[in-house]
Amino acid sequence: MKKHLSKLIFALIIIAYVICCFIQSPIRDAVGSMWSLLPPIVAIGLALITKEVYSSLFIGILTGGIVFAIASGSGFSGMFNTIVKDGLISNLADADNMGILVFLVVLGIIVVLMNKAGGSRAYGEWAVKHIKSRVGANISTFVLGIMIFVDDYFNCLTVGSVMRPVTDKHKISRAKLAYLIDSTAAPVCIIAPISSWAAAVSGTVKGVNGIQLFIRTIPYNLYALLTLLMVVFISISDIDYGPMKVHEDNARKGDLFTTRNKIYPEDAQPEHSRGKVIDLVLPVIILIGMCVLGMLYTGDFFSGKGFVDAFAECNACYGLALGSIGALLIIIVYFQLRRVLTFNQCMDSIAEGFKQMVPAILILTFAWTLKTITASLEAGEFVSGVVRSATTIEILLPAILFVVALGLAFATGTSWGTFGILIPIVTEVFKEDLVNVTTSGAIPATVIICTSACLAGAVCGDHCSPISDTTIMASTGAQCDHINHVSTQLPYAMTVAAVSLGGYLLAGLVQNVYVVLISSAIVMIGVLMILKKLQKSGGGEKTSQQAEK
Image (cartoon, rainbow, N blue to C red; front, side, top):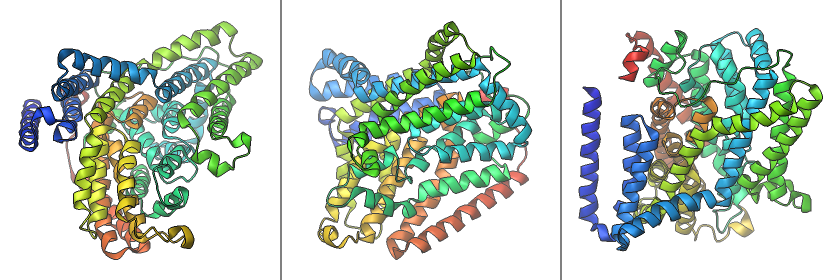
């Protein structure tokens, strides 16, 4: 009954939104209007209701193709051209996208190699002796996520492959693992001065030193900081609520997945029992080192450029692909020297690793195509116009920017694209205040707070969106059904978002980082304490079969 009700509500929302689109402008004028957000709204709504990601993304893509074809007057040929040529083919031919896919496949191969060599098994046995509780497994995942701060894709896949055996042994659901991974990926990268995210943000800033502004925004990035606080609290107290509680209750009974529509294969069984912990730890260290070197190389570090400048100007996608390939070659040689794998076993792992990453590749390809079509409909320009019309309310501007960034990132699935649109608007609005920054070096507090709100909202929307690259990567790293990850993470993300919104309302009034940060942290802990009390007083548990219905 609830399932049919949710479908009815979704249908009514779509109808209402389409009516609003027609009120704003006819469909032939869809470019740069409310129509531009219809495709991602359809895709996201269907994914959350049907729990099926492939068809939902495809229907969203098809909707975008039809809207664009009508708006451009190109008919069926224009629709096919938009979906296939400008969408699927162009995205698969894009150098940055292919760099991500190469990195994804290579990491899958390395994981298979570590499993076959027995490194994962040995690490799991070591973890059982040293990590003796669910709390310890949660905190270990959190700490590893904090340590891998250079890139969110790298973070998601590496933490997932290393911690999966540990969390499985302590009966932590794959949905919870995916949440821990996702919450220590983008939220960590967005507050790390040396990361691909810092480089992306600094590249969008005009009229002021980008890295300097990025560092000044860190204390005001409420969503990222409060997310990390929430992860620590939930990990230590071992409490859950919403759909996540269903998954965790079932995991305690031995069902790590809750729903049966698993799309990821089981981890390969080790082929050698003499594998040691070093056979997992050393390959991970090699991978981290080589990827950092790859990113520095693309930033011309070895041509004499400074370390920070090289990171700021690196090509993360190319660097990760370059570094991972180099790491793969070294790891194969290492396993040959250790004599735990034969050359033929190493070569067989290439195909197996590719197969493990096929679901993620399909979802990413569809998500990229949907983003391209949404960009063709100029969704960014439409949202930009909405933001510009709201800039007259300066006290409320941080909160408004946070909400707009959240909505845009949720609809488009890209945090980088979101702050790439909104931050130039902020610098343009406050350009008069930035005139003397070059000489004085003092960036106005209003600029810092508004920029932080854009970054926080972008990360929050990206965190919640089913079509976000990072969300997909977190599902892949945890080998968790993607829609399960999205539906269980959403209540947690919205809890932090609500507290963050209050923090930005306060920031617009007081513009004092200590007052805003301390007040927000106190409210966050208070909300979590209330949720903990409610969870303890609540009763009733759903079974795996009930959750599937």
